[in-house]
Length: 159
Image (cartoon, rainbow, N blue to C red):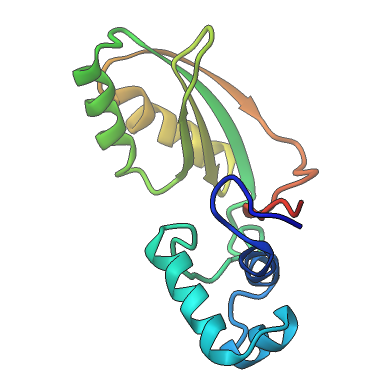
């Protein structure tokens, strides 16, 4: 297996593959799994962190067990799409914790938001009080998810 376009070799890729499944693995166990000693594994891990490939570590929570199993996707159209309007929208949407994801879209609308709440009633209030008052919102369309068929964190694609 040769050098990857992003500068990752097969050991870096193995580190990412293992860490994607077990982010709490010890460096000693990680080294054993990828076939290197502890010191070069630590150096590679540090380099991947410094390069921003590994952006951090965090706990993943089960939203259903936390009572946040209502998922809606919201198409948002803005009345103004100049850079200053986009920046204002971006800053404001970052302050809404129920918005799990927000993507600027090339298409018939401007943004796609993934919103998680505990109920349709909570979503309706969130839409009325927060989403609809975001800067430059012209209109929204909501799509309620009935079931999450696949919902995973980003994992590296092994080559």
